[in-house]
Image 1 (cartoon, one colour):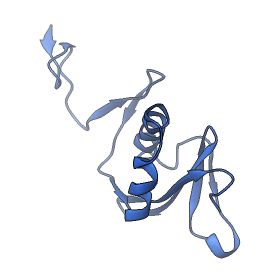
Image 2 (cartoon, one colour; image 1 turned 90 degrees about the vertical axis):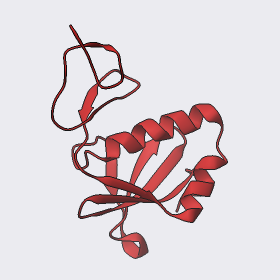
Image 3 (spheres, rainbow, N blue to C red; image 1 turned 30 degrees about the vertical axis):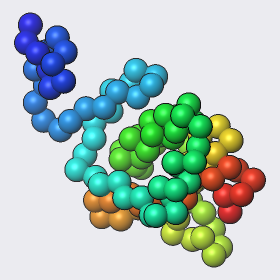
Amino acid sequence: MTRGRGGEKGAQIDGPPLARSRLGEILLIMAVAVVYTKSAAKDVAGLPAIVRARIADKIVELQAYPSVQGVKALKGALKGQFRVRVGNYRILFTVGAGTRTIIAVDDRKEAY
């Protein structure tokens, strides 16, 4: 057995980096940058630690968009933006060539 990237025992993995979600699924992360707006960074910083962890897991998954479950396109004035649900919170984001921009992370009552 060889050691993996993080020093853990296992087979050597070559290619794109892997991430493990809290559910244990292995996700291939393509060369996609996640960018937070200043307001989104403040939103995340103000959340309880357990919620921040769940939000972080979902944001890792967003790098694999469009194969992420639960993503919905917004309509009207918010056209071009997407949202994904994480418990009572919503992550609002846009998709660009090689980027996912997190616009806001808010309680569902205040998200739109």
